[in-house]
Length: 277
Image (tube, rainbow, N blue to C red; front, top):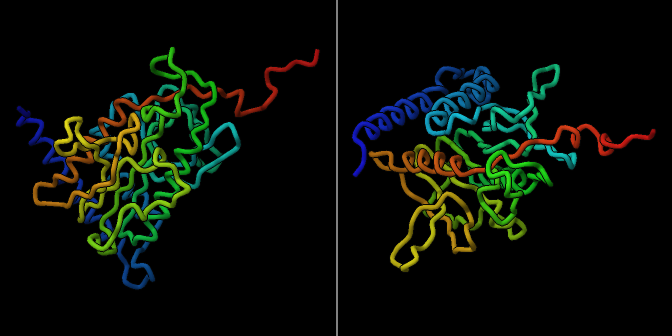
């Protein structure tokens, strides 16, 4: 059985999200500009806020939303990330004088890219960026915020940053694409996306075979207990089942995702604990 109240609320939220996301470009449209936008930067910020407002309804309240750059103790940093979902209690407010925000990788739970219309080449660029973020979550011996007795495990999908893409539509023929072509052989499967949502086209998810070999089930992670997880595309329909799946995946993945407490000393200096006298 399912809850009619929850279904009706979800439908209302999704319809409002689709309406706002689809209409937002009109607010910044200007025919005299090359890309048709009066303020491209403001448009991007507005579009990201729409997605944050939507996702916030399906994310546990221990997390907060922001935008900025990710850093780790090995002096690696990401490019600008559209959406960063982080542990609100254990993330230091690191900002430049220009209000650029920097997030220690340890306490970040998820990162999302928000796009308008995506060509296949641009989609590939986005998944490579997100894969690099997953690969560079160098938590070393940081203390987990949950289950403190269990250290970071690079084989456990709960310990990886959740990554996703939301776009208006795909600017290519879906039927002609082999989704395995998104990634090069150099990218390990565990670093691949959790979901890719096209509001107009559908959602690219992961699925795994049932234990009894009778069909498949949707899965939050690109790899899990070494099971054979495959990419699978679900087409959009009038019921918005593809967006409902994105809501479920967001809630499930972030409910189980573990974050860690950053060691500020490691970010400041390699020998901060050392005394000369």
